Length: 119
Length: 107
Image 1 (tube, rainbow over the protein chains, first blue to last red):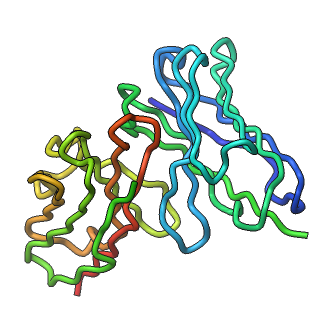
Image 2: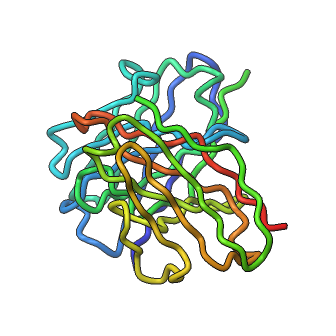
C-alpha cells in the first residue's frame, strides 16, 4: 500500500523557517518524481514545487521561488520542503504528492500537514 | 497560466453533473480531475483527460475538446457532494496549475 506521511512543526513565526518531511513507503521512491501542493484555509489547491527522481532538477511556483527549497533522500525514502522567510499567506495544509510519470500526474497524496505562520 | 472552473454546480440525485475547466494550454497538456471531501486529501478521479483510475465508479467520466475539458458525473449520488479540481501543466511543463475548484451540491 502506498503511504505518504508528512511531518513538521505546526506553528511558525513570520519570517521564520520550517522544514517539512514526507516519509514514503509501499513503492520504489527513487523511481518517482515528487511534489508539494498546498491549500490555504478555505481556499483551492496550489502547486508549490516538483523534484525529479534523482533530485537533479527542481521547479517552483513563483509565489515561493527563492524562499522554499525541495529536496529528497532516496536512501531514506523521504521528501523535504525547506521553507524560509515565511509569511502569513504561506499558512496552508501542505500535501506531499507522488507523480506517476513526472508530468504532473498526481496519483497519490499524503494526508497533509497544517502549517500556520503567526506571531 | 490559469485554469478556469465554474465555482458551483447543483444537481438532484440521479441527474448528470457536468463540470468544465478551460485553459489555453489544454490542447497541449493532459488534464486531471480530483475530488476533495471536507477535511480530506484530494483523490484522483480522472487522469489524462479521459481515463478512470481503478476503484473510481464508472459514473465518473472525462472528455476534452480544444481548450475545454469536462468532468461528467452520471447518476449523481449524495456521496458525490464535494469540491472538484481540474489540474494540468503549462506547455513547457515548468509549472503545475489547478483550477479554482467547483463545489458540487447534491440537492
